[in-house]
Image (spheres, rainbow, N blue to C red):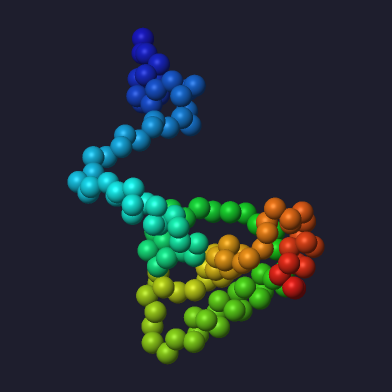
Length: 131
């Protein structure tokens, strides 16, 4: 007679499916930043070059959004135009596609002076952006 563990190929209990173990912190050889450095980084309102680079290094996640066919076509055409602006070949990671344009749009929204606590719907946002 076999046990549950061997029937499942050593995968564990079915009730544990989908659970992830907490990652153990890795020992760092770098010294921790001093409070003075942390305070200076929080005092800057605009993202610094380092923060923008860090954001680019963040793990990418998929989202599912609904846009109009016209918007989808505009994104595709604009990304194609940006890619075509290059006379020399561009490395695949540096090519522009519609998802990159959406990421830039998010950056633009984050960089606005909009009081987000006053925005209640899409029309409010369009008015705040003067669209």
